[in-house]
Image (cartoon, rainbow, N blue to C red):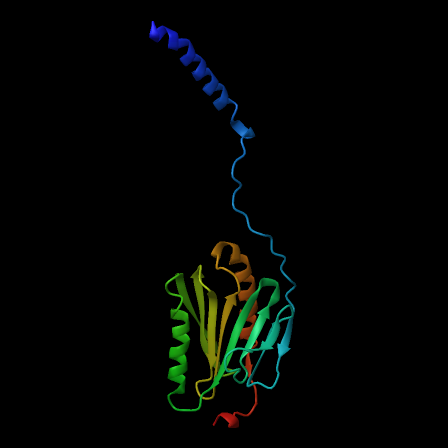
Length: 206
């Protein structure tokens, strides 16, 4: 008798569940796929930076070159600020004075890149060479959720050493930043292609 009593109730319960499941379809709210803000990229026009330093280059008009006001405020250390993207290209310059300076500066450049090994998915090296300007070096592309995605150095091996590293002032996210990194990387590559040493005297370093 107890079995017969519960059979109608069990059948009704199954019917309710079936109706509920059948009514699901497109009316049930589903989590939205992850999306990122649309980035409005500025026009690519360039201007020359040549302000009494041993180097000059062309940089995008939407960026601004400012003296590095942190640390020792060393000679011709700059920040190229990409304001629309909250990013900075940190620029440092060192004269080659002593015989072993170049090797020390090269080791220093590799050390700064190696600091990102822990989170980097890959690090590629691209040679930079401009024999007519006597400038050569390496461009490092750092993939993954790293603080810096691009670094490079240029030198003439006898007098000058120029190093730069790109940092975004936000939490690293390779997916959301990828279009911006690619856009800024093009401008940095253009900077490198227009780079030149100047005739500014280095007597103060010697």
